[in-house]
Structures are given as C-alpha cells and as structure tokens.
Image (cartoon, rainbow, N blue to C red):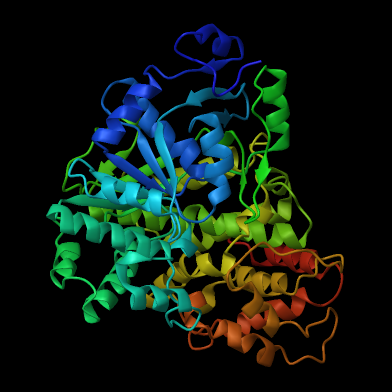
Length: 546
C-alpha cells in the first residue's frame, strides 16, 4: 500500500505501481522557497482548490516556472487544516474521473504551508501577516464560495460580525473580508507593495465583489481613524492593488465512497472521508471531472508566473466578464441549479441519473437553449453553444462524477440573483423582449419556493441543503400544505418574490410574479404535482427548436 506521506522522490516505483503520477520537484524545496519568498497565497482549502488551483501550481512547479509552493489560508473550518492538511504533509491525491476511461491519479505536493486563521490563532496570524508583508508576494486567489464575501444580511444591512469588525479595527478581525483587509493593511504599512487579489469563486463580477466588501471594512476603519486614510487610496490604486475578474469552471463533487473504494483496491491507503462539525466533506483525495476552464483578467501589478502554461486563459477584463456571464448566468450554473431544485423534489441523488430523465433534460434544454442563450454575448474565447452542448452531452451525464442535486442546492438563495436575475434583466433591457415571455425561469423559481416547503413530490419531508437564508425563507411557506387550495398564494409568496436582493428585481413589478405564483399553485396541487407540472410544461411550452 502507498500513502500520501511516502517518499515519492526516493521510491517512485511505489507510486507508479498504484497508478499514481508524482511531482517532478522536491516538496522540501518549494516549502523553503515559500518561507523565504512567497509568491502565491490561496484562501479556502476545499475540494475545488485541491483539484484545480493546486494542480495549476503543480504543473508550473514541474516545469520550474513557479519557484515556491502555495500557502493555503483557511478561515472557515479548522478541522480541514488539522485533519486533512497537517497529517498528510499538505499533500493530496487528485483523481480525474472520465466517462469512458480509467481515472487519472496524481499526487499533488504544491502546497508549502496550510494555515488556519482566526482572531484567536496568534501564531498563525503573525505568520500570515509576515507573508503579506513580504514584497515577493505576487497574488492571492480565493475559493471561499459566495457566502465568504457577504457582509450584509437579506435586507442589505451590515451583519453583526461585520459591524464588530469595523468597531474593533484591523487587530482582531473575524469575517474573512476583514481578515483580508487587515492583511492588506499590513502590506500597506510594510511598504505599499503591489499585489493582485484574484477571486476565483463561481459568481459574476467576483473581483468587483471582493473589492467592494474589502472596502466596506477598510472605509469603516478609516472613518473611525483606526487606519491611515491613505490606505483607501492604496486599495483603489490599480497599480498597487488589483482585483481581477475571473471565470472558473470545473465540476468538483465531494469525495465519494466509491472512488475511495477504487483507490483502496489500487493500493492507495489514505481514503478516509471526513465530514467536519461544520459539515465540510473532504478527504486526502479529491475527485473531479476532466473538463476545466479558468479565465483571468491579466492584471497583476507585482508580476505573475506564466499561468497560461498550465492552461489558464489570460485576457482583458471585458472578455473575462463576457465568458463569466456566459457560464454563470446562462450556459452552466442556471442549468445546474434547476437540476438541483427539481432533483431534490423528485428524490434524485445523482446528477448523471437526472440526465436520463426526459422531463429534466427538457427543462434544462429549454432553459439553456431557449431562454438563456438568446441573450448571451459571445466571449469569442469559448463558443456558448458548444459550451452548452458539451455540458449536456458529456459533462452532466458522466456517470463517474459522483455529483448530487443536494450538493448543488447549497446556498441557492445566494446564487439565484446571478443565475437567473441577470438573464431576467437582459429581457427587461432588450426592447425586443419582455420578461413575460419567459416560461422555464418562472417554473424554476416556483420550484425553489416549492423546495422551501421541505416536502418532496411523494409528500414526504426531506432535509434541505444548507443556505444562510433558509430559516428566513422557510418561515414564509411554513403554513403551506399540499393540495390546500384555500391558501392565499400571493400573500405567502409576496415577501419572497418581491425581494430584490434575491432576484435582482421585484418580480411583480416586471410582470413575472403572477406567473411564478401560477406555477407554484400547480406544484403544490398534491402528490405527484411536481412531476406532472414539469412534464406538461416541457411538453406544451418547449421552444420549437428544442
């Protein structure tokens, strides 16, 4: 049996016998280099990072284009560092799952250090502050999900944590955005050194969101004279601090038991899957799909390695925005969320199995081709129609990708504004179109409201996926019962559908509220109503070319 911690330099055959590719560099070298001259820090040590960012670094280290390893900063879940990074020397196994071939397995050793950071971790905080104060640091990347950026509640007001962070200044930050602002202040104080802050999280205008939230904290400090007011100028000077946009795409489910079993059969012993107290599912290995895209605005004021040599597409801001809008608001993410919502209601536990269902397939085809694609701007670097075709015909049906609608349904309230609100806005802005033309987006939004009830299509309760607004949203529909036609649907749904922070618009003001209500009424008509409504809508409302 081979372990992650075995010596891949002195005993490469041990790894090759298990079918594992190994690094072409010594981990000890990149650890030393990162300690003296750090180049890359990444916030968020989860599965996407382990499959994608860490692999990019490995490819660059293998060709000697990157000299030091990544330093991982985790601000959410200490168990990830204590039980997954530290025991395995910050190494991980990447498993690429293909539909028609054996998986590709590679030992990744590109992480030089992994640090859990919070207000109580003085030693770790001092270490990360020293790293940010080093002029050699070129860029920071993020994969912390949408909720990691949010400093406001559903009504747009600062959260209590954000208010506390502003009151107490940069010395004891609690939110990730305050931690980042504090570290940037240390860099400012050390010499106003340049740096790129690159959000690679899966939502539109991610770099702008990162900058906006960091500035909320920093400006709050400046207004209270807790930091030098010139710090704000530093953050706004793109020659000093940049916040590039990016588009990232790689379906990366939680580590799967069947993958662990397969690895064990091949002679790999580190296969225990951990579910932390904070419900992070992670393992010494990470499983992902073959297809991947990372497009980044090429704005790195302190330089960068040749990321394009590892498959990253570097381009201008507008092209990144177009590619991101294509993917996040039209050609992938909205389809994923549709499958998540209806998959949970219809008791599916596999995305690939959903793709065998004609009604669900019809749903996402009508959404993607019929309603999203007509308002998408072609980014030129990726063809939108080819992108959807690849998704529907190759990626989502891949039976070896252990993805679930329950995973995709996490944080749905946070992603709806982007995944559907942007397309709705296109229909508002285009004089040749009207939001009332839409059929499948209103059905999906009604499906989400139906999902909030927590009753599946068989009339059985189910556990909804974690979502920061779940308790707020479910209280609005708590009195809804299936086949209860006496309920005033408008009164029930009005607080939800009029919430502009969720949908980007008050749906009643743009003519969609009543249509969503009508679909919701059909969806609660009793057992089997979800399936019936979905089937009849696909049958009767499909676009001619579907």
